[in-house]
Length: 327
Ligand code: ES4
Ligand code: ZN
Image (cartoon, rainbow, N blue to C red):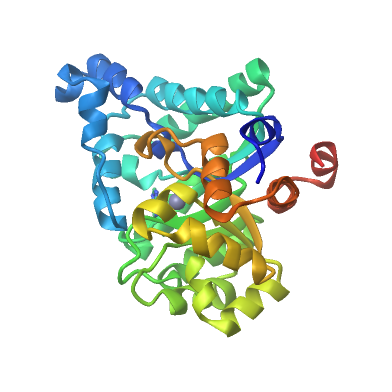
């Protein structure tokens, strides 16, 4: 297997991280004091002790509670800058970050507040640490298709700052096809498309099929259940669909997954990347730690980790010149 120092020195790209999920307990306390919220009296350990989940809904309940602390443009700036500073220190050269504007606009925070804070942090972090980043706007799948459409309309003045659209949050009863219209608008506007097909969700195989065949998803976020359906697996392999695999939620939601599934995905000839997902809620497992979890589970060799890292740079939504500079 690869050593820790090999993983730490490897140039890395991240393709699956939710900005709101990078909110660390320490920053929660800062924001709570700044904005006058009750948790300001808690310690970091108190907050961490509440981070117990074993499925998607129990995770989302924690994530939604934390989102409430983000209120001002400066809050979004601090969130994004802290994440970029952290992963730049781990030799992450490039990251594509999901954000969930509807979780903010539905509680009265302007789209502009969210994106301006994030964009200023991206620029400052590139200046200060050299890290390159782009944004993927996710739609909240338990909210209506109309709400997703309204959100896309709100984003129109900022499309030059958004490289793609995604789909996240509660998958149960919310298939990709529900959002066919807004994904078509996004594609026609020249944006890239990806979506979550979370682990072991109801109708997961039909959701994966819709993502690949009906709504033009270029990647699958998680997507592990492809392993159970030979025809989906063959399609994903033939189309070189990148899978954004996240070892921490794998471990929390499907124990044994890193031991079995990562090797199975590789053996099936699929293109996988390794990512953090929500490091603020997942024991601060950022890119280095996520790669070590994958290595520990699947006994990944240095050569395999180089391939996985190159997969991420190849799957990144960047131009040929930037890609050459990384590879
Ligand atoms: C998420 Cl792991 C995951 N799945 C679906 N939605 C999410 N939002 C934040 N993390
Ligand atoms: Zn995710």
